[in-house]
Image 1 (cartoon, protein in one colour):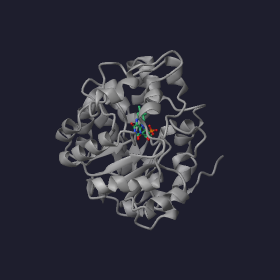
Image 2: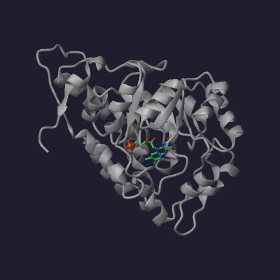
Image 3: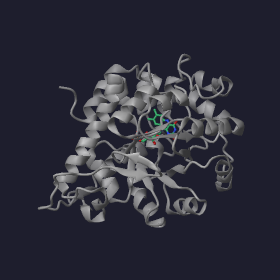
Length: 362
Ligand code: FNR
């Protein structure tokens, strides 16, 4: 029998991967306080089960920004899936399709947008970082639309890369055979070299990411695309309000898996203020530390419409390719369905604040 939990898949992946790749995937920034707090926050909530409810059918499907999600789960955008699997993002796309989950492909995907779109059978969105080279960004947006991507997700918590000490210690650089194939190689060269005490990822971002970006620049994307625009990396009510004022279609409450500002709020702690700052039906997603169906139920009860899952999908991919990644997603699906049944709340809309209490034992 294979692992029954994501923690079991994590252990198997760790045994499989070279240490510097493991550190790149698993690591956070600074003292990794925020990274550690992300999963811990879920334990602060208890579930309030209702009884004598017909739970013979639990429905997990919904439409989000025009995309049909069979379950309220997406794969968070992550660079270079080929670091852990020879096929990379095309395997992830098939896994997402099998499970009915959303895939958010990363700007630094190691397969082309067209290959990923051809492999995808479910909803597919594209994540962007704001590069100094706007022509490269414009070309990506055009290709994403042509390939049938359903939304653009702009990551706004990374004007520069967090201090990821593991990568600095390892002098981590992206191996030469693994490339962000959707961008001109000249724009990516810095990722592939690191001197002692530096990281190719951080050096590359310093060179290529545009740190002057402000709210007014969002209009530039809007002029180029009619796709829904999602902002990833919102942690405050103030920014949630600004996102709505600037016509953004959805936000992802996220601290980048604890890889950017160390000491930043855990996503789950920020979620209530973000939800309260926005109009009632404004879609809010959450990521960071989601590791079980119970975690998903808690996030949804606090107002998230869906969650994104990062590292666990790479653990699945590293240990079993497409089938391994699909296993992670179906485990989460089955756990969520089971939680909803035992909680007496068979519909997503019934996962609200009344489902939660503070965990009573500190
Ligand atoms: C990421 N993340 C990320 N986010 C983003 O917007 N663009 C990116 O290219 C990447 N790349 C990336 C690589 C790796 C290896 C990891 C682990 C993460 C962050 C990601 O989208 C998400 O916010 C977190 O991973 C969510 O936290 P968990 O589920 O990993 O705890």
